[in-house]
Image (cartoon, rainbow, N blue to C red; front, side):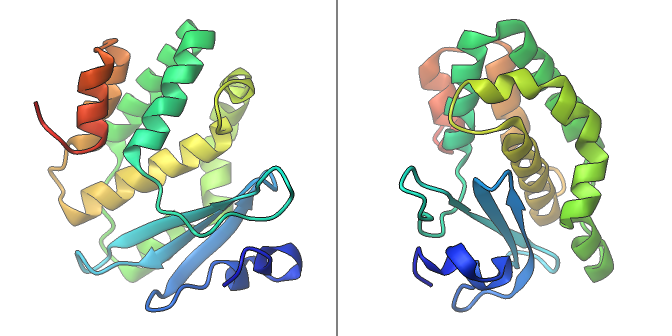
Length: 188
């Protein structure tokens, strides 16, 4: 798919990838399109991809979100709105403890459904909207992406901890080297 395929086509067409079966795709604030695909690491694995609207109005290539992108954006938000960003991190840490792995095909479709996710986080989108003014990503994109990353990680390994470790490092104000090390899966 070319970058232009997102202009007039259906979102699903915009997120088609060879060798990947699309489960759900949705547009966030007309700035991002998230696609959720069937993965292969576990029975109900999900693979998350996205496209971002560029300044010239075209769409980026399909990208894989990385923890480092998420962390850098949060660091930028923490510089501008320290207390609000810390509250957001505490909310995400609480959410981490609540997230369960996906255990059925029906559950995978439901928990990756845009309307389900929007209803689930309506209050948080409003509570943290000020953070959208800083950094690269909107709170809606970050929160939905965080939820999907948590689900993905716990579905593939129920006792996973990488995303939680990253959230804790950000919350504790760890040095940039430790945060980057955690976000890029490298250990010191």
